[in-house]
Image: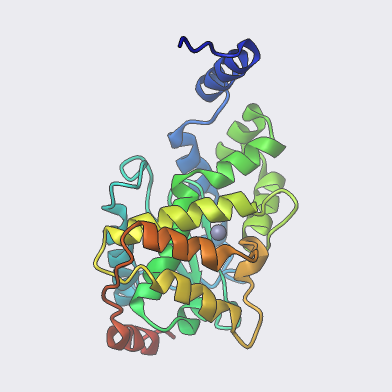
Length: 261
Ligand SMILES: [Zn+2]
C-alpha cells in the first residue's frame, strides 16, 4: 500500500525544517551567549563567590575529570562544538546547580556537600550536560526573544536582558524554567551517558532521592521542576539500558568533600 504524507503535515515539516536552518541560533551563538553569562557571573563575586581555579586546582580537576568521561559518550552530540567548563560557587547554604548555553556548569558547594558519592555527582553533571547538549535554554530563550534580540544579547549589547537571564538560570523564572518534558529528556539522556562510563548509573536515581530528602528544600527543584513519576521513568530507562550497576567511589568523594572550603 502506498503511503501519502498528509499535506498539512508536509507543510508543517517543511516549515520546521526551514525554521531550523534560518531562525535557530548557531552552536557558536550558544557559546557566545554562554560566555557573556559566564563573564557576568565571574565579575560579580558578591553574588557568585566562584572558587579561583589557581587556588583550588584539585577541585576543578576532580570535577572536570568526571565531566570529561561523560563527554566521551556517543550520546553527546555537541561535545566538539561547545566550550566545556565548570565553576564551583562557594555557598554551602545553596543546594543547587545550573548551566548556561555552550557548555558552562555552575555547582554550589551546598549541592556538592549534599551528595553521597562520585557516581551521584556524575549523575548530576550528566543531567546538566543533557540540558546543554539538547540546547534547552536556547530553545526557552527563543520562545521569549526573537533571533535578533538573542544575537544582541550574545554580542553583549543587552545588559538588562542578560541580567534577567542570569536571574532566571539561578532562581527559575517564567521565561527560564525547564519544562517537565525537558527534565524527562535530560534524565533519559543522562542515563544514556552514564551507561557509557564505569559509574553506577542507578546513582542518578539515588542523587534525586538524596536531594528530595535534604533538610533544606533543594533550590535545585526551583529550576528543575520535579514531578511524580520521575523515579519510575528513570528506573524504566535504567532497566531498558541493561540495569547494570558500577562504581560509586564513595571514599574518594568523601575526601573531595573535605577539600571544599
Ligand atoms: Zn533539569
